[in-house]
Image 1 (cartoon, rainbow, N blue to C red):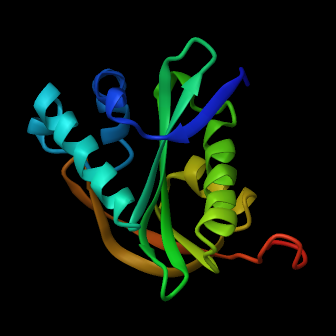
Image 2 (cartoon, helix red, strand yellow):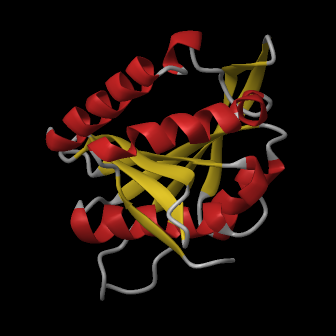
Length: 180
């Protein structure tokens, strides 16, 4: 894996984010819900970034981008639906097709786990994966997530409703023993 950085999304990431999403649109749509067509425009992505940044400012989300050594945006990773009272959040990630299988999703998920534990002081994380998305499921399991209940009709992929599962990870504060 090449040198990469994972950092919080910034307003100036809108143009690279649009290029990333456009370049990987067909790849993503084979694996997850498709985005509306109006997302794939300068205005659509700028509105998306503004929304994510507002959610971050309100403490409900921590959006991140993954950038390679040349500065190219090659992935995304988010803590979303942060609930500080309950101590939980959901994780999600999108890795570009050309970068798949190189350990980026695992690195991104480790980054999100550290953010959740150390910065947000959360006690657990959840994730959802479509049945049959073995790469994503492997990443979750490699990072300690445990498969939970089935979620029927979790997404529409290529026009068909697909089932999935919830996954969970219990966090321990740094220095309080082994993390699951």
